[in-house]
Image (tube, rainbow, N blue to C red; front, side, top):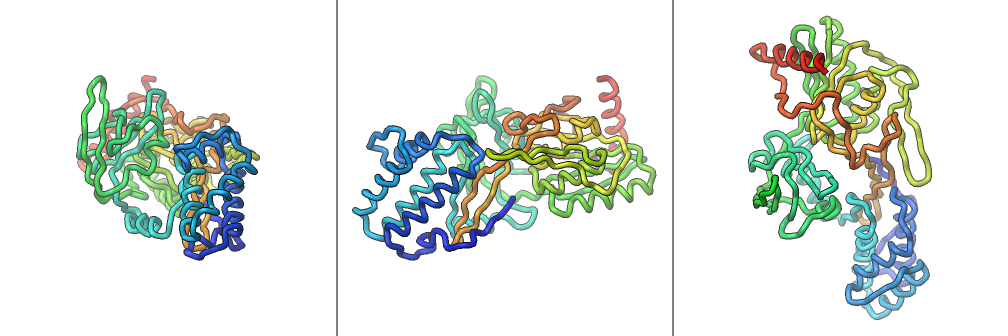
Length: 405
């Protein structure tokens, strides 16, 4: 995730300073323009501002509103408020602008919220429920569940449709975003024609950043999160595997929540030709192609395992290799998260988070909302275990099933 520091004083009233109305409003309008110009989504500014006003003033009706009209409405209302309430109102106005975007990941966090978020994360361990959600045509569904997670233990399964979260109806991914908060969540789910309720208590979830095994000339690497140093660990592991005479590599990206895009691109490059297209970063104003610059190349047959929780950087890695026919993808359709977020750090410790780009696969297709279809579909393939020789027999089963396609 990119982070940019604004080099000038911005939004100082957010830090508790009491600014005069016009000065505070000017900073607010600056941030409004930042949101409008940087968001990935093509929006009609007048309609966007109209929606924002409807959130701020739910008992009034507004037509599509120009920026000048929007500013005049805010100025008139701010005149009636004492200084502390002006600052709070402008903060609510930012939230209304973000809520009016078709961006499920847009957020504006206070220092307290950021601190609480940090308390829930310790390295690769975090407090949560273990649910991966995706937008489908008929609503929001559970696309994946992390192993040993509270959701798994509660009996939630991929494919369950989310009808309600904490009593609120869920129709879009944006409706669900920000509502799965510890310590407890109350869900109304639909499985087939049956609706049922689940109460899930949040718990600690540990991600495996890198795990490698070798058995009978078959290498196995499992990543549940791709870190900045994952590419180096991967290269070092492959060098070790090659010294042992590797014949096949199995890259397990099931339950891979994503991570560092640069690291994912480097790993894919180890199996591609120089200058092969890895992905395209698309924003509203430009397209940028990222090509293979890897100095290493491993000429080893590769199988990638995916499931409904394989997301983001894990999908980028999978899609690049699949499109170039450098790997055979085995498992389930991936989650479909191809958005890239930018975080701005603001004075006073506040953060603005906004979706500013998405990545496209080498074939030009977007991942967001679509996912990646495997070459071979299988929903029950177990986790590899090196002990007791089970690892080898499962690899043989895998190769047999691939050979039948």
